[in-house]
Image (cartoon, rainbow, N blue to C red; front, top):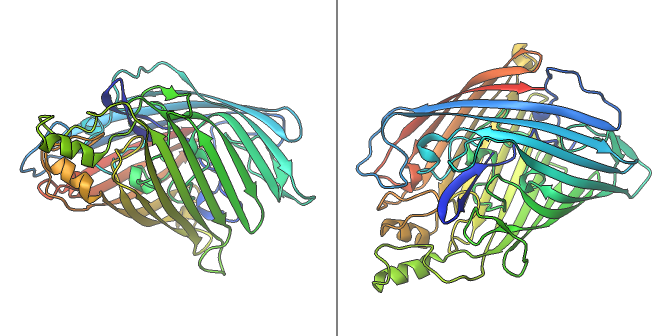
Length: 457
């Protein structure tokens, strides 16, 4: 997955953690276990696995009345990126485990990962200063507190070594984590390994979740789960003093709070489903679009500059709705809605202030390809009026800056097919279309074609 941020004053986008998400056991169809290259044990104290994901993307030339320093390139361009991850875990007792992951990522995205609200590749790395050297992705302690005698089976995987958990429980996690491992997950759209690739389809594009340039943060997460409902809370470090920079350990200067409540019952009672409600608030050294505009109109800056402000602590907040609903054992619908206040600078993820997305995921059982899967989805992204005015006056944001803006919502579609080749090998195409890329009616439309090869170890 990809994080948009800034490093040493230079805008950047970097690698977000990429892991197959373990969902609540009620929604089975879109998260059916995928075959792996090597067999994994269903019991035991230890877990060891890995993955490798390769995505090639290209776009043909398209119409653009003008372009700026952070425009999506209107000429033909291509990109190839990879993410390789090793997962390890050990259970220290019946209810305690330690998880450690190492990762390696390389490959700049199309146009240097600028010019789109919902960028086309969750695996893309933008910042050229991030080397391909392996790095520590996660290291966390997970403690489970059972609240009853009833047990349920659990899928062992990268985020848990437990094969059985209490049906009603409290989970505590602390360490180096990825917020998106636990918040805003979705069985149809959360996994760039085998599903969609676009930021605004695999994530809530308006959710400005915290992370360092590699996509991780240090924090604590507490979660309650029961058969009818669940809830989770996290407190974590934010980046600063510029977005994408080193994490700020002084919580008075920067921090994030995330809360999510979910009901394990969909909108159609005859089939399983989940509805999640998300709320979040970030504090960091974020700029204010109106302040940047006022400074420009007063002649204090040559163009509106979101970074031209004293060291400060400002607030950005938002909410989201996330649902998944099985129609049959092989067909599942999903949808998301997200909003943030849109006045404060886009800081950690995408330049999206409002988003609505939805789609369908299908397993290959119906055409006798049991381990294949396919999907079709759309997203419509927008920005606030003050954010749009800032860009129209020539300002540049974290990912956008055409030198001007004729505003229109960015509308995109994505479809993919992932074929199981042999054991843990998968491959398949993906096509995305963008109308008003970067919210600019003077540019586009543009088509992005992709091909993915994935290995599940």
